[in-house]
Image 1: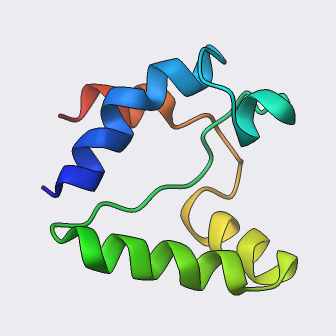
Image 2: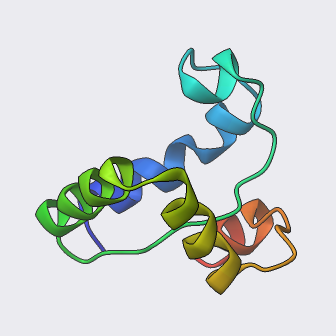
Length: 81
């Protein structure tokens, strides 16, 4: 598990509850519909940049491949570690 992965998990609650100002608070995001786990923080950052650079359609296709019903995955990842 990377430090970045640990940081992400430790802040899931804060983002979900909109304690931290950022994208989730600004746009009132309420569901975690996609995530990836990495052992290396550099690979995690590279993947995040790759996803951000992709088109909206590619992002939607990525979510649909993992979570076709767009269920909230917060409890799944919060309880997995």
